[in-house]
Image 1 (cartoon, rainbow, N blue to C red):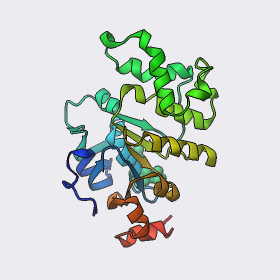
Image 2 (image 1 turned 45 degrees about the horizontal axis):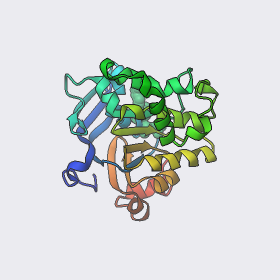
Image 3 (image 1 turned 180 degrees about the vertical axis):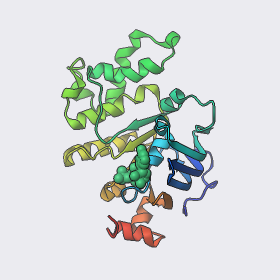
Length: 264
Ligand SMILES: Nc1ncnc2c1ncn2[C@@H]1O[C@H](COP(=O)(O)OP(=O)(O)OP(=O)(O)O)[C@@H](O)[C@H]1O
């Protein structure tokens, strides 16, 4: 049951799902998920291992499509378009919905080419100007607070960067194609506490410009780094509310049990 109710949030909803069900073969992983994820804020998704957080995230940019045995029913509207309708181009979905993974996964090419990779792929040939490249690279790296560290070594291999820098780069390379939504699946889990703090600070900087949905096991992170929080259990949404309220006055016993560490 949701506490932030469908239909109440008006046009500023970035991701809206209705009766979203998903099966891996015969195993049902998501049950009637109705969510309204607001535009321009950070929403965290928490819940015990296996409750369907990553499955939900992967549905919103249709990575699950790669698996032949996944079946979905219901709708997922991203910025007003139902992305699971027949005929929707996955390339367009991926352009609007960027994804950041647990382990930073830069390509084994230069820092500069990493930033330009998606931009080259997604910019129509007639609109692409080589003379724009420098400013595109600088803008994206500045946005992720990495420019000063890397501006003198843009041609170095991205894989030689620290994990924190790699993760920032993986966020930077999404930005030139102007995604409305950034999905982050435990983006700090491979980082040390200092790297975690730096990436959290960055995510907070991006707030407003982008709609950010972040899956995390780290409740302290959800608490300090999100505006709204969704608690899931066994494929269902139990509670979706203001983060402060969820941690202080959870409305459901299951939420309270999880927050107090009574689930694995
Ligand atoms: N590719 C897959 N094929 C079959 N079953 C899967 C697949 N991916 C996930 N599942 C199953 O779907 C359920 C939800 O998994 P999911 O990874 O979405 O949970 P999660 O909440 O993100 O877990 P974690 O916090 O451990 O990452 C689990 O029972 C999992 O075993």
